Amino acid sequence: MTFSHRDPGTAEQAWADTPWITNAVRLELDDLARLIVVAAHPDDETLGAGGLIAGATRRGIPVDVLVLSDGEASHPASQTHTRERLSRVRRTEVTDAVAHLAPSARLHFAGLPDGDLAENREAGARALASVLGAPPSGAEAETGGATTGIWIVAPWRDDGHPDHTLAGDVAAAGAAWAGARLLEYPIWAWHWSTPDGEWPLDLIRRFELGSEDHVRKSQALALHRSQVRPLSDRPGDEAVVPPEMAAHFARGFEIFVDRTAAEAPPPDVPGMATLTKSFFDGFYREARDPWGFETRWYERRKRALTLAALPRERFGTALELGCSIGVLTADLADRCDSVTAVDIAEQPLSIARERLGGRPGVSFERMTLPGEWPSGLFDLIVVSEVGYYLATIDLERFFQRCRDSLAPGGVLIACHWRHPVPEYPLSGDRVHEILATVPGLVRTVAHRETDFLLEVWQPESARSVAQDEGLVP
Image (cartoon, rainbow, N blue to C red; front, side, top):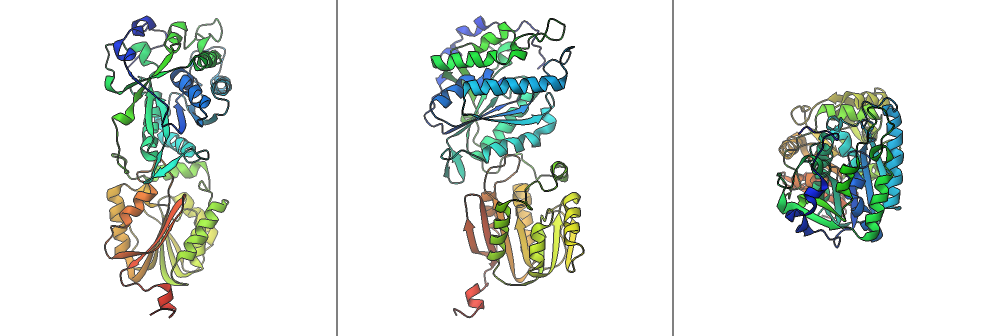
């Protein structure tokens, strides 16, 4: 699809009496507990879902707005505004517009490059995961590992703009993970398409705007001044959303495509492959300790619980799969005669080697699991926060290799984050469901929190700690 805002486009009058719009199923907010609106650029949120944002807020429903780019490429031929200046201007505009629509809304900026979102898919997914992972109190209810009452609203993936497609893809993955309702809003399709075009008529939903919400949306759109007005009278500074385009968003209703009605993805989303080395290389380029192993009380507490769950005071040989920067490795070295620590990326391994400073009995190897695997048998295998990086078929092979690498009477301990991360092929709960299918192992410790699962698995003949201590037969 190729189009320009300078093209004449389809007039709003052509849409006015379209039967499939007039007779569309009404969208009600009865089951909405939390609204997350994803925008590819500043103003998408107002154009496509400004009335919904205002209406949800008026009903006391928590609202988050995630803006993936700063919209700095809106006027590529401008002689008066650099990309840096447009970035600043548009951030200010969207801040003002969202505050007008929903004073209590939380606004999040991903700061990704405008026009190049497709090359930053993983960063977009991380941004949405961050929003999903911090719900306001009382905004979610947990049922079978899925979060209910959340709506994720994003640009329509068939809108014709590649940035909108990417934003919709990110939202779809997030909705699959969170068990959320997924709604998509058209923007440019009103311009280039026609009423008899290829619209998913059975998925169209119509949200009626109350008079107050209608006014708020109109006023919020006016706050995006750099888009609805010319930047100057020079060539290249024309309005991106001229009056004939803005007319599509002056309606007393908003149209959404209800993707939830068409998509019911299973816990492990089809087509999501095992994350590769390039993913982790990019992640560690952004920060030395991206997960906060060295600084967060959450991580210190989780490590203490992990170590406390081990059924023996000491082990001979240990294998840590996914050691990252070696913080847990150091604790394991205090409890084990030798530790083999493995990770896929070289950067965290170099930090881990520096941390342990040639400590006897500790070795590090860079491997891509499960295709590569360390040799030997181990009395302890640690699988901490690594299983959900693998697709189902690879994780099944991974756990079988763990089982094959356990020494007689060996112990496998696994711990995983339970909150949704759209970019991961599996959820933490799903990882432990697959672990439970490994033959020859029984669960001897099960610790479940809102944030993580911690389990110990041993051979069926394993004795309990009390039995080993002679406290029970």
